[in-house]
Each structure stands twice: as structure tokens, then as C-alpha cells.
Amino acid sequence: MINQSDDISLRQGHRARLRQKFLAGQLSEEELLELLLTYAIPRRDVYTLSRQLYKKYGNLYQLFSAPMESLLQNKGIKESTAIFFKIIHKLMALEYRCVLDSEPIFHNYAKFENYCKLILGGKPIEEFHVLYMDAQFKLIQDHLHSTGTTDWAAVYVREIVKRALNLNASNIALIHNHPTPNTTFSSQDIKITMEIESALEKLGIGLYDHFVVSGGIVYSARNSHILNKRN
Image (cartoon, rainbow, N blue to C red; front, side):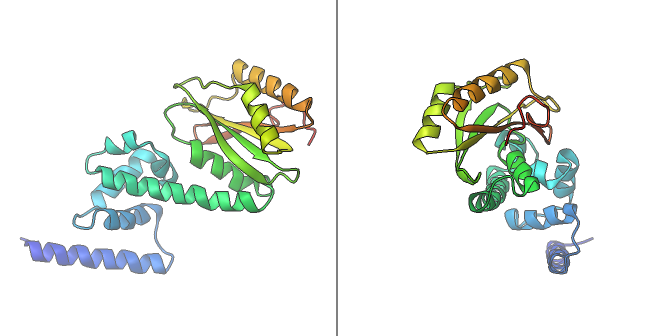
């Protein structure tokens, strides 16, 4: 029978081995999650919890992107641990923002896609973002234009145009999410895209693209031939 002191000693030894494997670059994603949980929940054995979370969410990205409400539904996850995950999620998004602020945002398309998925992946309601850019496609501002319901978010064309002029933007891109997985552009999405493109074109401002994030996929209006590939 293992007494409490033996249990603590075994746990400390296991955690020390996890840290050494991390420093050697040998941790799997599941083990990395376990190591993270040792810092968020320092006085408990988190092996079983880390495996349960990984199995439920599939990977670390989906876990960190999950809404607070979803995280708190898991037995063993309290508010402090859920906030710990959301801090990591925020730091990941900030890292990508640093890249987008320093070079044309489509210079590294993989990083741009990851940024889209980080800010919108796993959201239970629709959000509509507008990226305002200069003539070199460097990001001026990522503006949360509106939030809505599970299948709709309001879009105000006049407000988008007004902000583009105030920011002296030369180009913009649109991003919104579909909480329902694997759903691409709706007829309403296409309609509003055309309206925004027409309004901006009159002022010499380019609409580079409209992106939809759904089910871990980023769909492009340009690649879907909804927008003309003029840029």
C-alpha cells in the first residue's frame, strides 16, 4: 500500500521526468498537456485528466481554443485552470499578431490561417472581424466588427467604409466564423461580400478576401471564385 508521502514522491519524480523530456524535445502533445497541467494543478495527479482532455478535444489547439463554458464542463477543471488555458491561447494569438504587424499579412499564409483559427476557432457564436491594411498589406487594425448568434452576425457596410477611411486603409480583409463545422460561404455571406466590395471599390480601397473559419478549416472567397482575383 502506497502512503501519502510515497505518492507525493512518485508524483514529483514523474513530473521531474516530464520536465527533462521537455528540455530534450521528446514530449508528445499528450505529455506536454500533462506537464502544463502540473503547473495549473500542482497538488494533484493530472495524468488521467490530461488524457481525458486530449481525447475529448483531439489536440492542444482545439483545447486552448475551446470556450470557457466548454472547459468548465470537464470534471477536474476549475475556473483557474480554464483561465490558464485561455492565457496560453491569448499568448499564441499575440505571437501571430506580432508577425502580422511587421510584414504583409499574407506573406506567410500558414501563419495567417493559424491566426484566423486562433481568434475564431471554437467560438459558439458568430463573430465578424475586419482587417484594415495599408498599401503593402501590413495590418493596421484587427477590428471586431460585430458578434451575433450561432448562425448570424450583423454587418454594417457603412461602418466598415467609415473606419477604412479614418484609418487611411488601402485594403481590407473580412473574417468570420461558422460555429457549425465544415460550412462554407452562405448565400448571405456572398451577398454581403459583394456589397462591401462594391462600396470600397468606389473609394479606391481593395477588398483582398473574405475568410470563413469553420471546423478547423479556413475557407477563402478568392479561392472559391466568389471574389475576382485582382490583387
